[in-house]
Length: 462
Image (cartoon, rainbow, N blue to C red; front, top):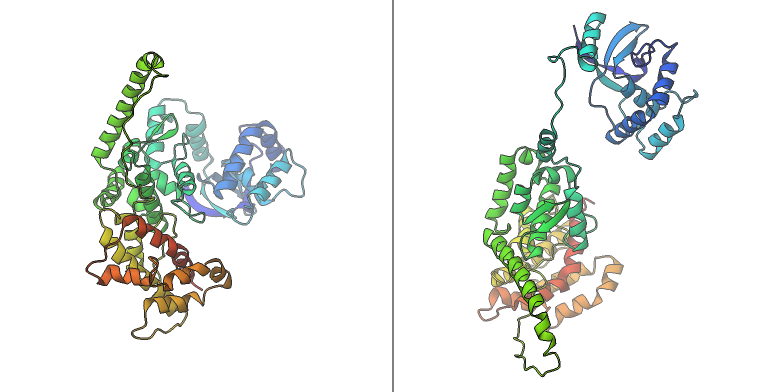
């Protein structure tokens, strides 16, 4: 009867009569035979164990006396584990230097298990039957049916483990490069890849993969990178977990919620981009066809229409830049600050929600200032002005921050400066003061280092 239990690695003996090599003298000879005759396979297996810090299939063992157990299936796994753990340090073994270096490179000696789960049986006939069915099946009923390439790819896509392209790494590199994630932020690769395990799911955020490369499906690439950085931060904060991306239904539920927040590209944006690409192709062909005719008139004077004035394009659609570190909800930061920060960074479009953005920004500055003051025991007067509060908080910050940002307070206190707190107060209380979108972004840029310093301090538990 097969039983399952945990056994110490030191009590497991590599089988000197393994069917791979026949009868040898002892464990040492069996290990040496594997290292010499299965060199590449053993190296690959050891590297995988060093990376994973575990083995996934329990060996099959039998008790052989003196509290020792002979391994009948899983000898390569046990050999690699023993080598990485340094069990044969005092002995000369084939290729041993490779395993010593591997253990050092991955610093895995302390993390590898010292006991593992094994299947154990005292019935040799039962053990031989199991080994036969696993390694030497005699009829079709015993044989394992290997997955076809289509079946294998279905599994890899469902779990996000396909090695064709590391989607999460590609996206992370892009978001870092474009400033949508700061250098300290990373993407939880396995969960992110699992969420976007198929092109149908990737297309919902405006991307597709062709020939192992990423293509955009809408004109506004910043919109795509904004939603991807938003999802990355939801993963990092635990708002999206592995449970949420377990099946296609739950993955679509996650994207449905984000779509309701207005962050996903619309079908019309994708259609417009496709039409634009077709127009570009047609224009290119037309230009080529008329190129010869145009050469004849190159030296003639041509009266061109004056260029149309185009309003300046905003540097970003939301008041807070996407690379700003997001507050972490905790004892120093109430959820209101966290949610308000996300609204200003991802949801409130400046052009469509100009007044709401300006008012919410003013509220965020005051709430962050108060949260910092509370943490550092700074007491404000009942009717103290926001500019005074910021000034007092500013002066408690590190000297280097004050030196590098000396113009910040100067701009803040000038009555006629657009960057002053008076401007922000007018957004809230004045019936006539309406901000200009580009100026509002400049105002936020002036506060960026102040906001970053507060968030970094409040995210710290110290």
